[in-house]
Length: 175
Image 1: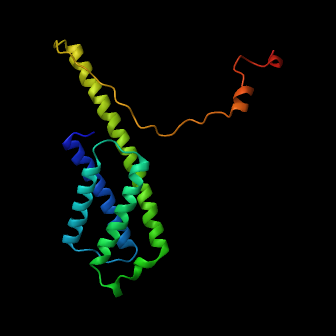
Image 2 (image 1 turned 120 degrees about the vertical axis):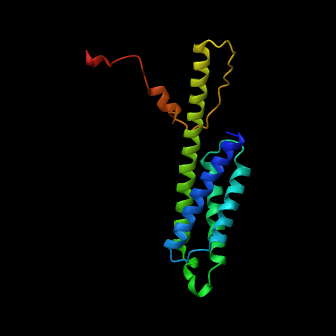
Image 3 (image 1 turned 90 degrees about the horizontal axis):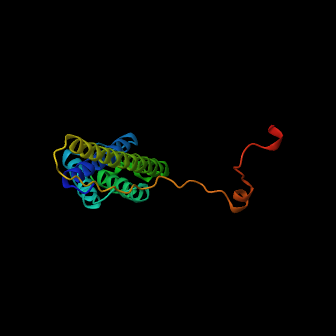
């Protein structure tokens, strides 16, 4: 995941998702469209930040604060270019709640996308290694398995419940 072209692709996806969502929310809540220079600066800043942070696969706990910071920063950037009298939507609590909801949805989407991309790359690597082995090219292919970020831990039964669970067979009254 740290290969430079893949890292740039991941940063571009992050910039596109965060920037587009923030711009759409900004317009939806009554703000004026920023100029092309402001929009380009916003996407360039997002791309740079995502490229610098994208050295390895990130999960939801890391992506959520990044998306929240991106939403806040983009709102401030878009608000800076508008006339204050025409841009009074920025003070409402509902607008901030929408930005927080959008940032959390973005973080979830991006975390799942990164996990799916990593799994796809691993499968493609294993497939290519299998093709080389089957073709009998004679090259030694070493495939290093990669660890995945766990989605969620499975709930474990409490010690009292674990002692009460019996997995020996059907109850006696069943016969």
